[in-house]
Image (cartoon, rainbow, N blue to C red; front, side, top):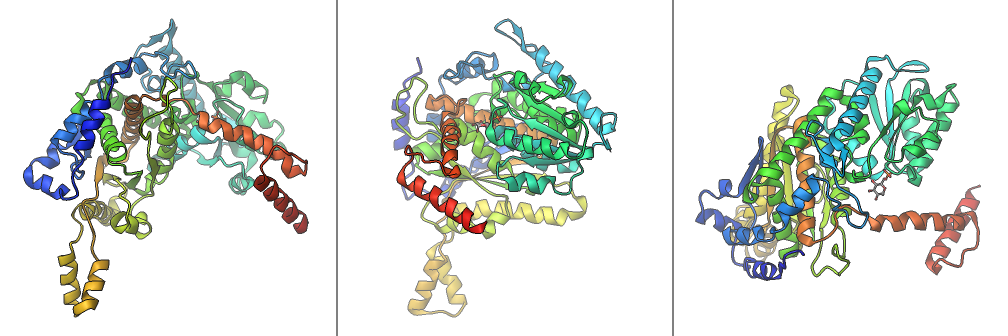
Length: 540
Ligand SMILES: O=P(O)(O)OC[C@H]1O[C@H](O)[C@H](O)[C@@H](O)[C@@H]1O
């Protein structure tokens, strides 16, 4: 029976700062605040001092976690915590292949290690050219997958481009033919390896793209299936595609799609950066696991990241959060986190089926800095909504010759969080206008446009450098944040029934586009389908 947290939630509401209290005052009161409201984990620093959380609020937030230790152990040890699908949740086992783990009589770690060895051997053979396409050494790899079978490997492959020394890696996800057409254009089928990544091996987008790739390959090579590999939990289905079992890498249903980049779904990443670097990603994830399992809650990075998020969304009512990596190679991290966070915690009922009494997860969005600064930061600084910002920055880049760029990047990151907190008062804005020679009503009017309310919260995650190890730490950090939030909300973070509906509906609508009458659809949908048919006909 989960502990009743209502009294803690009520207290948290009373601890929301009144309009008068500013974050800057918290720093005045406590000169050690920057350190006291930061957490370290194996070289990573998470600074949440530029938020309106004070000691009392932090203490109360920590009281939201009475069940956490027990639930955390339940996850790590393979209890069936995904109750609506009756499954264990063991993606952590994928990055801890050397830690013995037996679940329900099955030696999980041995299975994980064996699959990793097979991936390793296959990746080496592709990279060294001993595995050949029908036109010689593999030059290009196309990963076909969607959702969790795309976002993780794609995000990580972009993030780790300085480590690429394997074949060029491409990703196709959208069922829009434009996606696969653009990727295949210019590739040589004789030296391309196609990876079909799908946990279920039934996802219509992926299967449609895979068929198109197979047809493309068939037009040029004798044995197209020989240049296909498959990553799936449904290894029975991969056989139907004629893909040799030696190139099929299976995983169990205890790996959720959005948590799957650590295992076979990461094959495209492994091919790009090599098995040794891939294992470094795993080591980074495992280091964050150990930290999450062992660090006291107040010094526990995923726990504090989760509690800060809860403070902003559930307690203060800020509806979204922005993830702002000041690292161009983390350009797909916001998209990755959108699936991780919103598919996991975008729920409306508790584990027992009862309605939630407060919001679950917020809307997550973002773009790399500094690009975002020249686009949507206007709203973040001066809009009427408060958007808590999660800045991410690496102390060092990978381009020593361009260190001037990197310092400027970092300066921008720090400047933004400082400006969000401090703002600019009306008096300071008036002074600026005075210096420009304005007076009277015009000075006042112009000054008001230049006021920044400030007191806007942000956190900063600092990493030494974006490496395979630190990327592993970051991804595992966010995974565990989602877990902690899910435990506190009392929801199941590991199912995704909300996505299933879309899959069913698309199949039901398809006949409309073939001109078949279908009274089951609403008038708007029918009218739109008719317009589409008319437009398509007039273009013929
Ligand atoms: O890997 P697949 O079985 O093809 O699934 C791909 C994606 O499908 C659905 O959209 C699920 O909601 C995602 O969690 C999953 O990652």
